[in-house]
Amino acid sequence: NAGVTQTPKFRVLKTGQSMTLLCAQDMNHEYMYWYRQDPGMGLRLIHYSVGEGTTAKGEVPDGYNVSRLKKQNFLLGLESAAPSQTSVYFCASSSGTSGETQYFGPGTRLLVL
Amino acid sequence: KQEVTQIPAALSVPEGENLVLNCSFTDSAIYNLQWFRQDPGKGLTSLLLIQSSQREQTSGRLNASLDKSSGRSTLYIAASQPGDSATYLCAVSYTNAGKSTFGDGTTLTVKP
Image 1: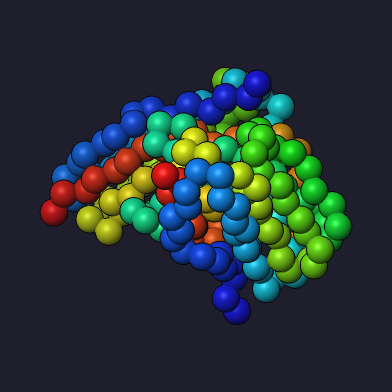
Image 2 (image 1 turned 135 degrees about the vertical axis):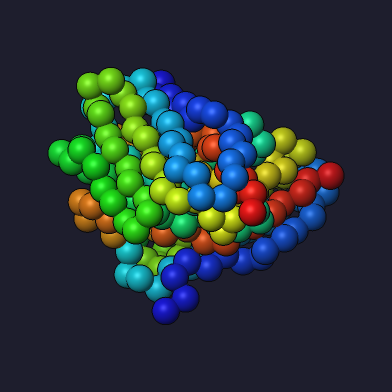
């Protein structure tokens, strides 16, 4: 049981390049989330999904797109990376059941030059 | 907009001390509140989750309390150890969709 995994662990992009971050969970969770963590700003929700085939915007969705084609995977895309998207990205999942916590992945460090 | 504030931002204590970390939130209509631990360069690990109907939760040396009316939660750590050194984050959810608003965290250093 690997829990929540994220690929890649670290990436450097040039402004304007695109990339996709992959999150996978093996706990059969319905809900999945993408957060970004920046110094002094805590974790902020980018997008989330309450089930396969569904996505919704979080607090800071601009510049990102997501897809949940399979229940176990949640992809975060950057179509045209900007330096402001330099951050640490965390994926999380939860069952949605009352009293159940979110499980976080180890994070992806992204540097946009 | 819901806001979550954690005070202090940093705390340094000698080993063995009991300590309290604070979390305050602006909207009292919460679904649940969680305390997480984050080690440098790592993801978040859930410590305790308090549902809106509960007043406190305990796990080992950790005790978290919730006072919705005042918009506050505290995390009490008993007999602190150097291994407790980490950043502690408070997260508040307002729906069962699990979307959470996080505080900026309190960075704890426990000195041997």
